[in-house]
Image 1 (cartoon, one colour):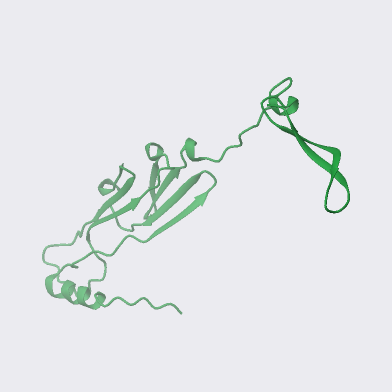
Image 2 (tube, helix red, strand yellow):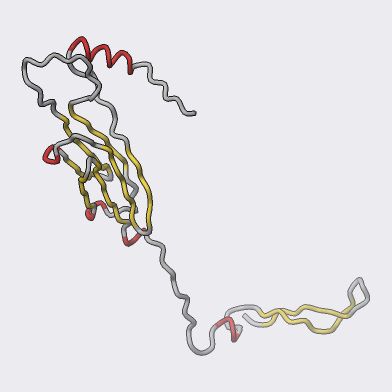
Length: 168
């Protein structure tokens, strides 16, 4: 079982009850996954007015900003207030291999989905190796020393071998 410990949660709840609003809004829960040549980032933003959403990318930093407003009568007195309101902001640092100019955003059913494609220069690609036609320096030995085994003087094991360097 996973238990999330947050010592400030009770303090924020108390501040919300005493002062009528939460001191700090909760973070936007997020999922990020890669599928093929793109990354998909999803933020849970229930109750956010789509007109308040702002998504921007600058210097490889993606910023998501949203606002949840309370729309209650002025004479309302809260008995329990657990739904945070206010302005939410989250920033993600993106790598150089992403096409920040081609990010697409959709907001549906309280979920903001961002699709970030991998930049063309960052995609893996196969580099074909071609062979030059005709004789090459390796085939002809031009400009290289060619080592040949020739019989000649004796060696320690009693065989006659001699290596001779021929060429430039």
